Image 1 (cartoon, one colour):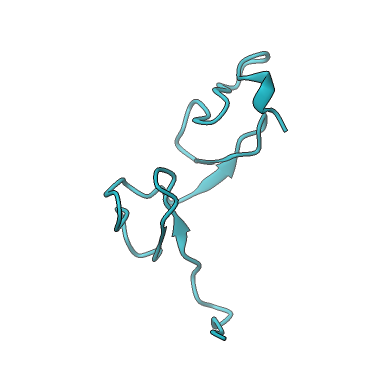
Image 2 (tube, rainbow, N blue to C red; image 1 turned 90 degrees about the vertical axis):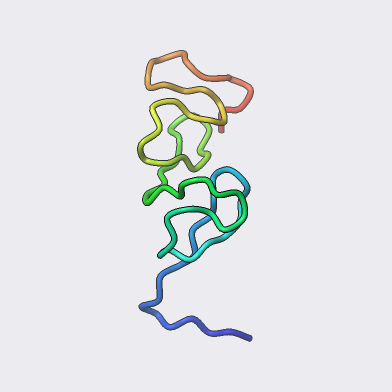
Length: 74
C-alpha cells in the first residue's frame, strides 16, 4: 500500500484522454493536450470542466437558461 504525505499534490486528470498526470506537467504525457490548472463542475450536468471553458463539453451548457442537453442533466 502506498501512503501519500498529507502535503503532496494530487495528480491531475487529462480532460481529453483521462490519463492522470503529475501536477507539475503542462501537457498530458499520453495525448499531449494542455492540462488546465483548475477544474470546476458544470452547474447543469456536474461534469468537471476546465475553469476557462465557456461551454460545457459534456452537455453544451453555456450559462444561459435552457441551454445544454436536458438528457445529460444531473
